[in-house]
Length: 442
Ligand code: H79
Image (cartoon, rainbow, N blue to C red; front, top):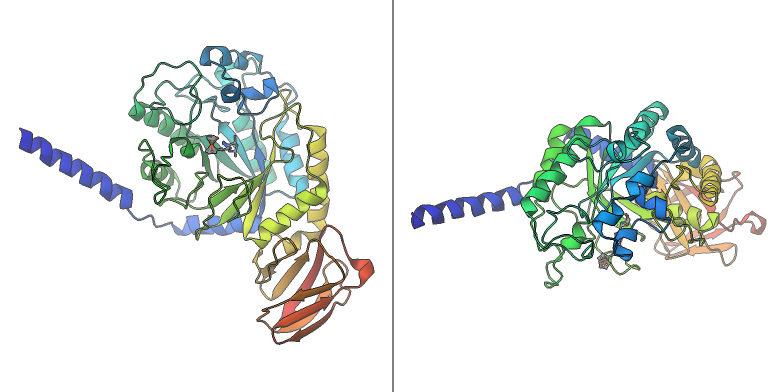
């Protein structure tokens, strides 16, 4: 008996090792989707849930230690009568964004779509009673915008999210639960999102809640088995073109299609939780306009239009998409300060988008001063914080046919000697936000 048991155990362990190492080979459709994704360069992040009612961000349940039974009153107050999917998709479009990524379930466990596996969702638990995600999906289809589902693997409400991780420990749940059951629930939700909605991919978050930081050499170690390969395979079996990304702050796992960075350009780690390594997948970086993801009544520190434009330029110069966040108010509207900024960005993108969309990072990069993007033989030098009208670039390895200002084709003087490129921009043409020099390469 004991022998059989041991044999079974070996088979089981071996089996799981095998599946963990199974190599993921993206399909042609998936690789095409990745190309589309990189060309798109600019997306809208939407953080919305019942937490917006409290106007204190999406972490309010954890930060105020709100027990589950109290938090469960919030859906009853959620009635965003002025929500208009058309207006939001219009705004994304006017801003020059090509896709929208919205929270289908954040850490609080509340689903913003018509989930069949849990009644804790916007259709069944709120007076509003309509499927926000479906309405956005339909409007996105109409306007040619792609839709991604943000999904939090971390759950502060589900009783089977046990053992608990680093957060959500004071929401009044009993100290028990069956992890496998939680995973089944999570996968059922992910499956219904993949099957029932026309989406382009998933944006996962919350993995880090279970990260075991005791082993510095193995940042991918977790206290529970997330079995990501199973979840990812399930998604790609539904539709191999779906792009999977996970905000776990470590190098991509097998089965993922893009890598994201939160509140940081790729490879930077100013937040302290970003991780510094860049893998080989398409990249994305996400940021907030003020300091909050979910609507925050008291957060008035909004980034300027100049800062936001420079962010997307820097992202593109680091080969990354820019996913810029809005957190709708409980009435369903986007706050005016954010709307105005997005529209201003759209104006800039209308004029200068050619130097961003469909580009990849160029070879020229001077930290905090100059980034470059490239499409074919066109190299766009973006001068971000000019000190004077002369730009010196060392180690320039290419040959030049001509240089003009992107804005109005004014000739830009250049001298290239011993791999040192000197560009001279007419002083009156310097743009404080971004002076773009278009170089035609030989
Ligand atoms: O959805 C938005 C945020 O709510 C979510 N991700 C973005 C896109 C987010 N969750 N956590 N964070 C952002 C910040 C993470 C902080 C962490 Fe930690 C530092 C996680 C692990 C170390 C704070 C300290 C939480 C656990 C310990």
